Figure 1: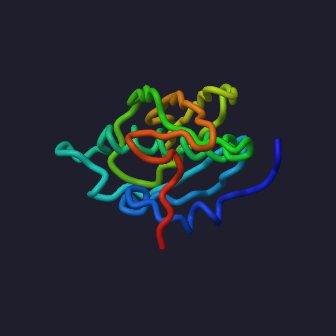
Figure 2: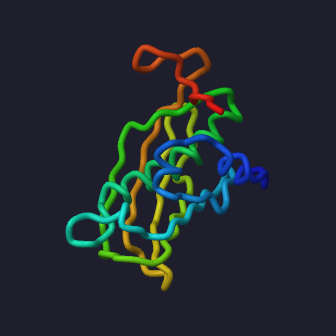
Figure 3: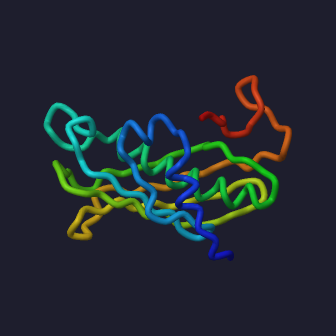
Length: 151
């Protein structure tokens, strides 16, 4: 696959949830997507550990970005069908890193696996996301299946 790096473009994108969570793209290519964030109070639940929804959201985002750039090369877009995220180890602080890689990049579906690790390299969460590839002109939820452009 191509070595083209989409990191700068992704960091400039106006994605509300990712910006609110402080997620930074480290590497975005057709074969690997890497994101990082520093754990803050906004990421934690009542026990002071990172909320499982944050892990799910990051897994979904990393997989979706990887699948989307692969699909765009074919004139398609993607939407998530399934997100299975497991919480392996509780974490209260530090920098977390999510690394996503494709399992399959088919014409109709893609599957991506994502592992989230702490600064010591220990896995804190992992998941897989199955995505549907949509041809140009497809609609979803009453609108066109293309990313919202703002800014």
